[in-house]
Image (cartoon, rainbow, N blue to C red):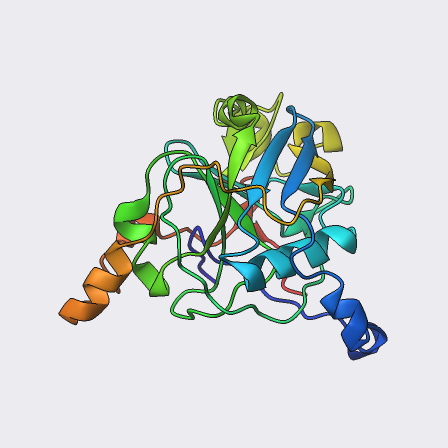
Length: 261
């Protein structure tokens, strides 16, 4: 099916796994870390989380970190001058890419604006409260669109180190919008060639580096004011952002879809 920047295919974890977590365990993930580091094959970057102002989203994100779900995933979408997106898939030696398991959806918290260097949650089209595991980093100021479309996209942190490494990823060649180091258009079109893990931008780990309760007070965070203005005027951005529409996530010329699960 077609996706937006912001879209993903949700594949719930088994009921048996979900049942393992007690209420106390779930609470232990709440607002107890605000700076995390992404270790990638193209250099690291750190994100300062808004754990006090977008608490549900941060708690959700930290749970994926603590569960190790983001370890050994790949960046699966790159749009230079727009966004870089991850948190949804792994490469396990063959195609299609393997979807990571996801938990329940999280409520939308569109407090901040999708300006350059912010990290936000992806979600399903026309479904405001549908975010699970996938995130994206804004390469530019995307507020005129992402702050209002689909109820606004929840910005839950800001890149405080390593934005240059993210911008280096934007220079990589792509195959069906997947950034592919040391890959060519010819290989992308060759149905018989299967790349190796070295041909992907891998995220080996995402870990907590500062567990202080509040670390974002020094940030000059930009509030999302467009959504309130639009709601008060009764207007809607639905359908106005056709430039964001993704073609179905096909892989490498031979048109294999990302696994649906």
